Amino acid sequence: MPVTPHLRLGVNIDHVATIRNARGGDHPDPVRAVRIVQEAGGDGITVHLREDRRHIRDSDLDAIMAGATLPINLEMAASDEMLAIALAHKPHAACIVPERREERTTEGGLDAAGGHNRLARYVTQLGEAGIRVSLFIEPDPRQIDAAIRLGAPVVELHTGRYAHFCLAGDSQGIEAELKRIADAAALATKNGIESHAGHGLTFENVQPIAAIAQLAELNIGHYLIGEAIFDGLESSIRRMRLLMDEARG
Image (tube, rainbow, N blue to C red; front, side, top):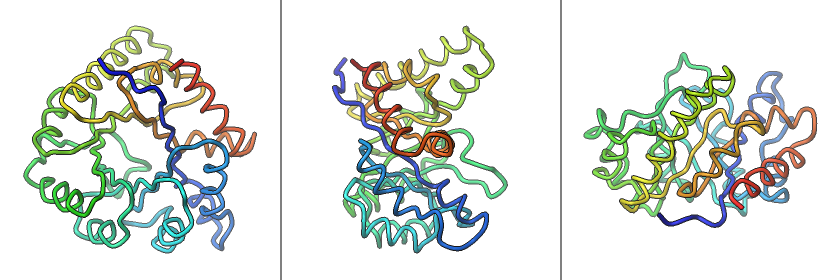
C-alpha cells in the first residue's frame, strides 16, 4: 500500500468563534487564529458554517477566505443554502457532514450509502466548481463503496468510537477500531480515494491513528482550542504536529 510521507494537520478553528459568541463582540477573532495556525505549522484551516451559525458566521467565512494563505476546508451540511455559499466562496475543499440542530457537535458519520441519491448532486456540483469534495463517514466498507459510487475524491473517517474506547481504557475496543479505520483507509486508497481522519483526537490518542500509513490528513479542532487556554494555540499545534511526525516517522 502507498504511504503518505507527510501527514497533514488541518486545524478546525470553530471554537474560537464559540468563545467569542458566548459573550458577543469581536474577541477572540477567528482570523487571528488562522494566522497562528499558519505560523505554527498547520497545513490547512477547517471551518463549519452550521445552519444555526452557532460558531462560525458568514462574515467570519468572508474574512477567513480573504486572509488565509493555507487551504480552507469548509464543513457543510448537504443543503441548498450551504451549497450556494460554497459555490460563491469556492474554498479549496468542502467536507459534507451530517448535521442536526440538537447536537452539540457532529456526532457520527454521514450515511453516504443510504443517502446516495440525495448527495449525488452536491458532490457533482461542488466538484464541477473545482472544490475538492470530502465525505465525513464511518470507517465502514459500505460507506467507502458509496463514496466510490458518488465519485468523491476524499473521505474523512470518523474516529469518535476510537476516542471513546481510549477514554474508557478499553484495549480490545481500541484495537478493533484501529483495525477498522486502517482497513477503511486501505480500501479507499486502493480505489483512488484520499483518506483523512478526525473527531476526538488528543495528544494522548493521536499517534496510533497518525501511524496508519494510508491516511493523508488529520483534522483536529476542539481539543487544540481547549489546550490553547492553558498553553497557547501555537504551542498546542506545534506539540500535535510533533506527535504526528513522530508516529509517521
